[in-house]
Image 1: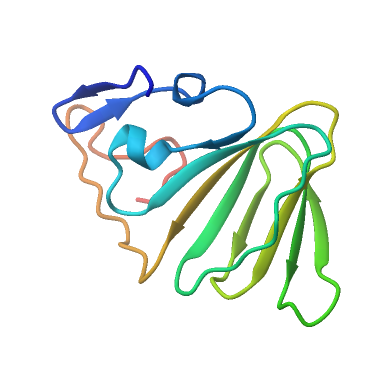
Image 2: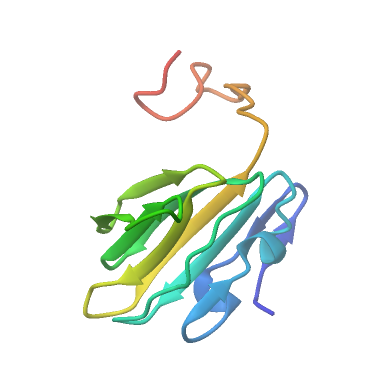
Length: 140
């Protein structure tokens, strides 16, 4: 769909190249991600998603743009609500019911990553002149 650039072991694109208007941007598909699920969601002002849960997949939501109200619960009563702005992050267990609503004035953009069965751990290996590895402030 988009203008994804691929090289040996990498892919580069932008959300604008993955679609127009409201809805999902299939980041995983466009970039060829295989280790976990990852998509972006563009929500117009005032728009709410339906609530959902997963059988096994934990999700993490990153609010890139806008202000989003998250609803969390187990379906047995009123959900807990939290309003998260740009830079905010929420993690949700698979079985937790969740829904989103854009409570801002413009489009909201939320990056959603999902997966199961564990954290790999720090397995990066430094190359070149930065033998410490990682960005400034990364644990040695």
